[in-house]
Amino acid sequence: MAEILPESDALPRAVALLDAGAVVAMPTETVYGLAADATNGEAVARIYETKGRPRFNPLIAHVCDMAMAERFAEFNALARRLAEAFWPGPLTMVLPQKPQSGVSPLVTAGLDTIALRWPRGFCARAIAELGRPVAAPSANSSGRVSTTTAEAVDADLGSRIELIVDAGATPVGVESTIVKVDGNGLTLLRPGGVAAEDIEAAAGVRLTRGAKSIEAPGMLASHYAPNANLRLNAGEVAAGEALLAFGPRRISGAEKAVAMRNLSETGDLREAAANLFSHLLELDRSGAGTIAAEPVPESGLGEAINDRLARAAAPRDS
Ligand code: TXA
Ligand code: MG
Image (cartoon, rainbow, N blue to C red; front, side, top):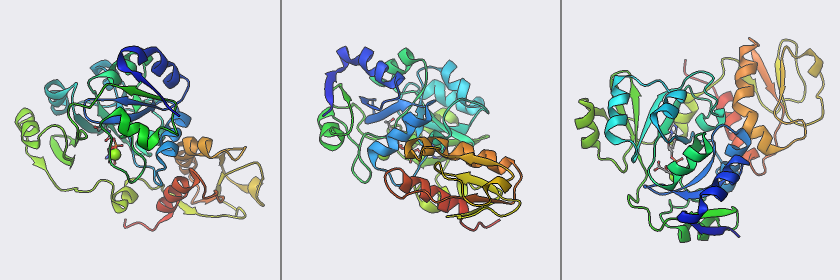
């Protein structure tokens, strides 16, 4: 069972757990978040495991000041204006990610953009103390509603986490507004705690309200796909192929692979999830026309790994 600590006492313990790669439920001003060190892939994999999410949706990276924000994303004048107007606060901006930013690719689901938010409250203090950003989706299991009290978090996830930080009911009560900043254009990806009109006023730009459901599978499918073809459930490697291995066994023809990465030598699904996007990217860079991917078991995080592999293997439009 999770320990529930009042926010006045919880900082050292919460930060020690984050530093050790654990997930901690903690309040932001919008809803409770399930937080983990965004630079630690296995810690981020634990978020998906704890939520029982069958898919790797990209997560919001939470920061505690502009200096930290600018380590991870490119801010143009428009993004800077919005940050000045609404941070800290319930606004998330999707921005171009800086290369080698150090954020686990599992946070961004392999995209070259990153969703950043500087929240208010305990979460921001924990980030400052940790010195690293935290990834935090809403603290609810997959398919359940977001939580706005420690009791609600406990009822949903209490058996799966070690610590819940209690700050009472969250003041905003709905998730952050998400906007994508694209040059001088702004797209509303999710309505939330900051009114769209207020964003338009501060930005001096009209919001495009095109993309309704960012969680729609189709949209995510088009986000990231390797240039190479992906051959799923490979039982052998053909000449010229790269190999995405899983587990200790070497499949036949493995020595012929033009490049090889192993998601987890020991068959650990958490490690495999943490490696998934970086390994796919590296194999893609090898220039191989086809990446042969060994089967991954469908249990636990395997479901999300297989979902992502299936999307990467799906036929594309262009
Ligand atoms: O208020 C909030 O935003 C809360 C608190 C905990 O901060 N967090 C939250 O996270 O609602 P989550 O994971 O439930 O929702 C994040 C949304 C997802 O729908 C995801 O698809 C989208 O942000 N997202 C993240 N990165 C993205 C990116 N690079 N491009 C487009 N959408 C992105
Ligand atoms: Mg959510």
